[in-house]
Length: 411
Image 1: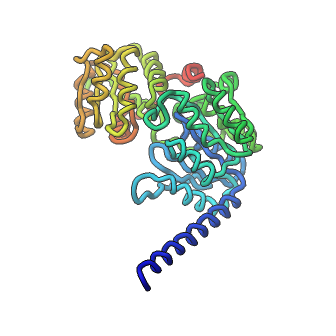
Image 2: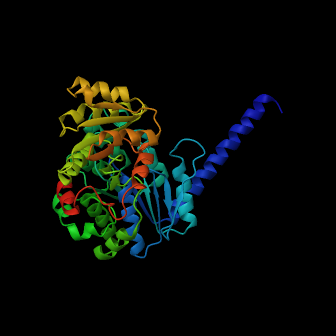
Image 3: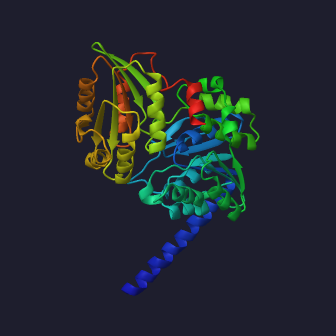
């Protein structure tokens, strides 16, 4: 066979295989009558887990997939398995998730959107998921290098995954007109969760979680479950029983050789709005500590995030020390100093091992300190959070603020 003929045969074979894959994927989608696609700046993984827990409790055979801190597929019995990735994360893996859910005879699939680029968000929805229910948690200034340059551009990018002819649920309020326009364009019904609806999630209901959960997330998930016929009380019980995302907001208290250290794991909050909120709430909960230490985990591949947080943190309630870990810390430091941060507060532990970072933080504590990690859960963020957790006093692990207080602040 000549070279040209061989190329033709290869091209035709690949085309046929591609058509077969598309047909198989469409068949898998048809086997799953309820498909819920979850997107947003903050809370995607939490809302995915909450909805899945509520639907399971309502008797629906439900699979879920979170991208979050660690990619996980959650089976109908609640068991979690890691999502295998032979290389870097790729949106094509959503096809495997749909196939796996179909093989489980799932009635519902709750899947977190893993795309950032607006065109990929459209692709994931329009070709891979074809959701019956779209969910956008919120639209805040993050990943501006991809979805920006402004906050409204983030909302427009997220709106790209609005389903056609379905329903779009959201707890976003500031940019609700952007989502409403997308819903009209896609002929979908917009269901907006109001501040009043979030406020109806009581402190007692939030206290049912073993970790700190936001009222907005719970109200949004309850609204989706209600639309699918699951009563509020039944859905809540299922949500309480579900496992949290590994990056969930937690607090750990250490008694370390005469020092009292309160560590707030806020690494998963990485936009300025969410991060400042958690910082303020943590300070309000622990006014008696001697020192306040802000730990920022930087990533060289997220330069815009470092610049944003560096500029923003100067206007927050001031810490006594600012510890910079991870990579690309100079970007954060330069941005912060340029807008007024006292450079003597900066402590650099870039490229240090977690044990060394811990010892450095301990050296800054004095008799007592509030230490809060933020910026990025990726890289060493998850590892440092685990390091503090494993050294905390039994029974002292809690959320960073009283749940009622946290609910009010979020709304």
